[in-house]
Structure formats: C-alpha cells, structure tokens
Image 1: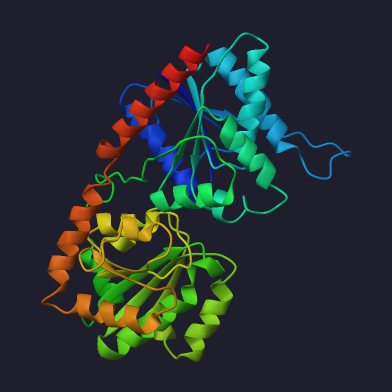
Image 2: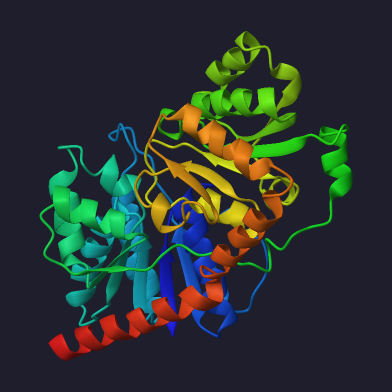
Length: 378
C-alpha cells in the first residue's frame, strides 16, 4: 500500500505518533510518503520504504502570512499523482484536513479518487478547533473525510459534543515502540543525580499552563519532605521561567534539574522511579505511556483520556485536577520500597497493551475499510 502521511514535523504528540506510525508501516512493507514543511524530528533513519516530500512555502509582498494550506494542498495533489498513492492519512485537523479536502476536489477533476483518513489528536479539537474562527471549517473538513479516528474515547466524545459531526469516529489509541523504550542500564546517570539513594521523579511536557507544571513542583515538594528525592523536568515552553522562580521560592533548586528538550527521553525515564502528569487536559497522555514503557508508574490527573491509559491503583494513581495533596500522598505510597517493584511491573504490563505491534494492525484494517468504502461509492 502506498500511503501519504501529513503531519506537523515538531516534537508535539501528533507529529511523533504520525512519524512512528509511518516508520512502523514501512517496516511492514508499505510505501510511506511524508508530506510536511520540514523533516519530522523522529524520522531519524534511512528506509527504502520511506520518502519525504517538503512543502515549499512561497512568500510574496502581497501576503502578510504565507498561504501554507494552499501550498500543502498543491503538494498533496502532486504527490498523489506522481507516486500513485492509495490513501492520504492526515494527522491533526487544522489545517491538514481542510487541505486534504481541497486536494481531493482537485484530483477528482482529473478522474482520481483518493481516500482521506483524518486522525484527531487533541488540541485540534479541544482548544484550537473550538475557536469560532475555525469551527465551521473543522466540522466541514472532518465530515468530508472518508475516515476519522481519534486517539481516545474521551476525545471522540468531546468531538461529537462540540462539533456538528456526522462521520463515524473510530477510536485507535496512541502506541509505543517497546523496543525503543526497553529498560536501559544507565544506573551511573541515576547515581550522579541521586548520590545518596534518593528516589528519582520525572516530568516531560511543553511547559504550557494546561500541563500544570506548577502542580508538578508542589507535588514533588510534598513527596520530598517525606521521601528524599530529586526531580527532573524535561521540556521547555512559556511557563519555564515561572517554574524556575517557583522552585527558587520553595527552596528546592538543589533538588530540581531542568534538562530542556531531549530527543532520547527514554534515557531519563529509564532511571526514574515515578512520573508526574497533573495536566488540566490530555486527550491521551503519550508522555505517560512512554514512562510506563520504561517501567515507571504514573501519578496523574483524571482529565480527558488519561484514565483510559493509567489504571488507578494498578499502573499508578489518578486524582482530580489540582488535588496536589492526594497526588503527593499516592506518590509517597508508590515510592515505598515494598510497593515500588509491583507498580513498576504493572506499569510495563499496561504499556505492553499499547505496543505498536498491537495497534498497527488496527490502522491497516481501518485503511482497508476506508478504501473499500470509497471504491464502492465510486
């Protein structure tokens, strides 16, 4: 099967999932054509079945903002024709789904019928898509897609609740390549951070308000008073300076390290004892899944799709958003020497359910279903 994958090439969850999906499909013999404005960050190896097509964006004095949506649609039309693609899979509704619709209409005038699958990842629905400026286009583009998937049941529910969607949405969860996240033996790194046998707690995010990184710090402070520990903060974003100030105010700078953006997050997670995700909203919680794949139990909020991943009392604990006291109490419980091994075991066991080998066939089956539907319509 020849598949075009359209995504954002950045570190964000949708781009990571799209790239990893493409790599997994390529390993099964499918020809994968990535179409985006720069090479995806996770597209870091050579494969005979993977191709990258850059979307060139022209600037003219007339345009205050370069028309990326039009350039993307034109590139889709070109690649579908030249490479004879069987299907386009666009990740993130804005602007990929609307660009795909334009490409479909142009190709139809040439006698080419290309099936389009749109995957909804989260903020394209829960934040950006709800804006009245974009909502009509988002609804229309989703309804014009030949197939629609969401990464969690909660996101599916929210899409139907806030948009006028007539299409059936298939839930296909995010996934992980367990081979990449297998427990690594880097105890020397942990010893450097925790020289006196402290527990190691970690958090990764884009440091935006919705991630509630201030709660991460507050939870850590409570845990640290009871259980000597260190905190590693991975990522960067608009809230970082505020978080640094908060750590200084609380007098814990010596116990906290800001590591910035890291591609190989598994190196940090593999030596962690606990992962914190107190987010105000998460459509799935991919960062938590990455932690669990490294045998790290998770303390999280119960927002969005997180409870579909983190099983309360088994792979970790979930609490109401903002309940710092309960999250810290549960974290202390997990970190007890008599409890930690079982929680680590359970976290990995849960992560295995989301291994790419289990989820990939779901996408392949769905592609076939959509292609068959399109053929029958024609």
